[in-house]
Image (cartoon, rainbow, N blue to C red; front, side, top):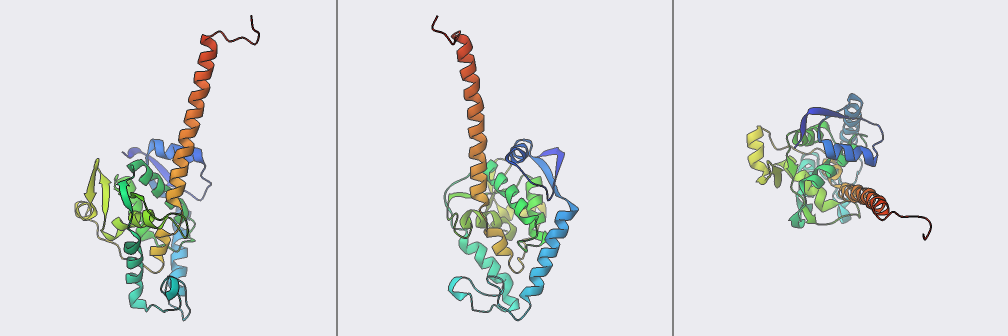
Length: 241
């Protein structure tokens, strides 16, 4: 559960494994540094400007894959991003622990903060609000990872923004629609490129890897402690006698 007495400001600074460990352990409320907000807003404005121009921008005003040269009209761009997210939310298997979902979301914030993804503040702030209210996306364990991104896990992370899917809330899996009504939130409408910004990336792999490294370090420290205790218990000596 989020520690309501602590606030962590997401900045443009470097985040180490120790920083991630601290965030995962303390679970502070989150807010974005003004410089981060400026970066995000600048990137989003750039995408909107370019999407309206008479040029093809993959996955923004064109289709995907073999449809990369098929122009998408302005009034269809929102539906393109919606369909992109929904069509990739096809993960299967058991739902991953809430702790993994939360760490994955935080690492995604670290990607958004640069402004390079072109995402606007609305979906980023909604994800921040979800974090601060202990509403974590329900993400199936198995699905497409790597390639052009952890497409399935990240699509499931994005579903609640659209009012779809399920979330972890108060120890239970709850339909997102129920939570939106309780929080008086409306489903978001994705702007050009935002579906891609949400699903492209390897934050699921990053979160898995970070958790594994944290556990390995804990095991190594425990092993060193046991070795030292055993040496003392057996009166270990450098000589035979």
